[in-house]
Length: 552
Ligand SMILES: *[C@@H]1O[C@H](CO)[C@@H](O)[C@H](O)[C@H]1NC(C)=O
Ligand SMILES: *[C@@H]1O[C@H](CO)[C@@H](O)[C@H](O)[C@H]1NC(C)=O
Ligand SMILES: *[C@@H]1O[C@H](CO)[C@@H](O)[C@H](O)[C@H]1NC(C)=O
Ligand SMILES: *[C@@H]1O[C@H](CO)[C@@H](O)[C@H](O)[C@H]1NC(C)=O
Ligand SMILES: *[C@@H]1O[C@H](CO)[C@@H](O)[C@H](O)[C@H]1NC(C)=O
Ligand SMILES: *[C@@H]1O[C@H](CO)[C@@H](O)[C@H](O)[C@H]1NC(C)=O
Ligand SMILES: *[C@@H]1O[C@H](CO)[C@@H](O)[C@H](O)[C@H]1NC(C)=O
Ligand SMILES: *[C@@H]1O[C@H](CO)[C@@H](O)[C@H](O)[C@H]1NC(C)=O
Image 1 (tube, protein in one colour):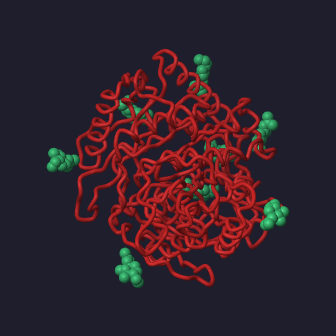
Image 2 (tube, rainbow, N blue to C red):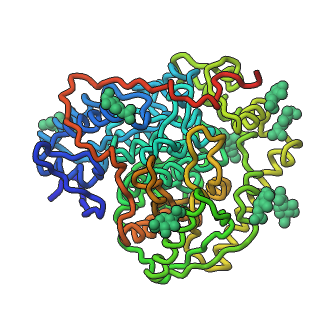
């Protein structure tokens, strides 16, 4: 009997043992890690050391890591002691090494938002969700790069430099949680966390051949996370399998009611404690009605659009073949460019960020307001962000006129959209909407913005989405395995369990995820006396993104 609860056989589990080493971190899952530990093939110290060894040797391929947790090995030793004494119960993430996007508060390491001005900003306590992850046994290996302050999707920052797509060294890894995406794809951890204000849990999953869940707003309390938007922010997991997303989501949601985040009061009774893992196999594609959002495609033939349109066509055919009914949704409402006019970030960012920075529990050296942060030169500006950041410095939720008619008018537009979306579901008897996360391949390094993404619909309406890999572009010289392509599966509020079942059924139709070629390397496990340090490469920031020049 396994000590770690039911260990379901994972479709994606690879062989757990190799000749020289009891644990293979490459493509490891929660189940394969627990299997290695439970059969005595490995120790928790070896599990943690094997991921640290990979980061140590291979991080220069992607520049995904900002910092490592100096306490990771000590925590592993404590878990080994617990295993040896076989004492008590083990949490669902016992000895599972994870990376946090560096906008999650941690008391052990600074929380920087990958922004130079916050390099020494030190929370005195963990975000509630981080405390919950540790309590479930997760080992925080360190922090991953993000697009600075999570404000765009290119994953370049003044503190962390440019993170590179592990499948194509000329492309970005999506974002803003691009460090997490690149790290998970490269097996630098078992899974990782992200945040999502418009696209940021989904774009990195799509661009790195991974699964993620953007939960319904309110499911997971957001306090202790560097904020942007009260209306649009959510947090969630990114992983290499649906099973690991399900387990990670269950643990993250178990943080429960968060007195500092009133959206958590709206969670329906009975939702907390849902075991997303145990229900995973219960769904079926047969008889499902999936709405294909035609407005979320770019049908103009091009080398960047065609691979996405081809992968989606194959996906639709496979889903039909498995018994699902595909309903074409043609309403002009579903136009991501037009929906962007309802974005609330310009109004909400300054107030939310000021509240985060002004908390007495935030120690270390840091600016105390957003305006102070942008009054120095320790930040990076990209052309497309300029207006948005600039406007947020002088705007608030009290704006009653101006851009898009002011805050309340935008909120009314979102309420209208939310109702229209519910009508689409009801009128067409839909189980979910499907569409490509991005209408084109993830953009190249040096691009002005991560264009063509469709995340705005879920972001505005607070709807849950599970993102799944659906294919790759053709191989090229810089992308020997092609560039990954992902699909969003969007549901009504609080239908995470059903969306995960659909994703599981999709995963069961055949493995699509590929390991980046260089990440297949077997890395010898070092015997560390202390956790190594990583130094982010800031020398690779494209010249198009000037550092510290806002308004100047
Ligand atoms: C990473 O560093 C190793 C060791 O210094 C080097 O051999 C390798 O070429 C580097 N790889 C990349 C992609 O920079
Ligand atoms: C077992 O765990 C309990 C609770 O953590 C602790 O109080 C106790 O000392 C442990 N016993 C042994 C033998 O380690
Ligand atoms: C919910 O919390 C937000 C942010 O803290 C606050 O602005 C808002 O007034 C609160 N809403 C209610 C109804 O208390
Ligand atoms: C990819 O390769 C296939 C098979 O060689 C070819 O039919 C297809 O046109 C190519 N697609 C693109 C977008 O280049
Ligand atoms: C989508 O909206 C944009 C901006 O409002 C508009 O320019 C474009 O024509 C619309 N696309 C379609 C297909 O209607
Ligand atoms: C940014 O805002 C400042 C003052 O608020 C203004 O002087 C400047 O022109 C703005 N820049 C842009 C590009 O909007
Ligand atoms: C909010 O009001 C301020 C002051 O009038 C103005 O400068 C700013 O542009 C407005 N913001 C928006 C998003 O309309
Ligand atoms: C929302 O819908 C109401 C009722 O149809 C309409 O009066 C209002 O103008 C709409 N508001 C926005 C901002 O779209």
